[in-house]
Length: 307
Image (tube, rainbow, N blue to C red; front, top):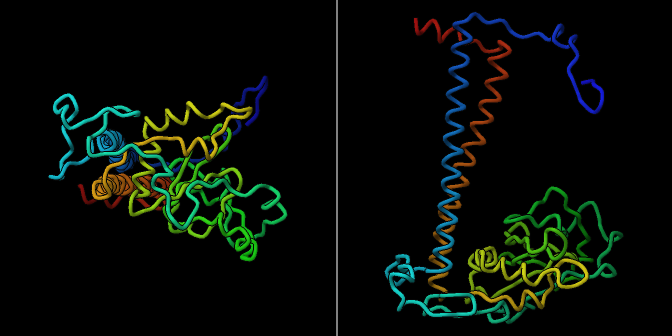
């Protein structure tokens, strides 16, 4: 590509030398129909994914504000059954729920809210090509852990930072910058990894607060609003352990939490399944385009069969 004044253009000589396979009109039409069929399937799958994501948002709102009654049904809205709700600091909540903070459901054997070690305890000189993974702010994305740029420390170093080790089910917060409040739930792969100074780790007593339920709560509009109000009050935009401890949320009984988590997991699995189908269709399209448009695979047998 060449050009002037910041604009790029394709030189005419490129088209003079650009070669394409020459198919007769009938074969071109069949090629187009095959690719159009795949495009239609891809677009339909994308529509399904978009619809599922919209359904998920509505379901999350209902689960976190109305919850599930003893019959396994969503409670009716407050407008239809005001006697089932009570006023709280975070708005109307079901009467059987309690207003809680992270420290109210802290585990007995671990510090509930913990900021990663300072630079003097964990610096660039400690990193190695392999060993125990260290999760930094870039690894904590919205809803997942990105392992593509991971640094490591020796097992000996990790042992010296034992209190900063992650356990499956911990909630990891990005604590500074534009990513403030971004969080992910630690999965089995993250179990045993170390956090650095830019991450706050939140642990709970799983018998009283299901980690996946807490993750959904911390990503609800209500909690996000609380985070937005407290972050950036210092000289640098960020959130600290005390501010996370001050966050309030409505918590149902463990049995109701578990049922809500099951329903969240079910729709997440549907989204993953449709996303995998879309990815597979895209790969098929790329492969077919490479085979058919180069003439490596011909559609002539299809035309002969049609005739």
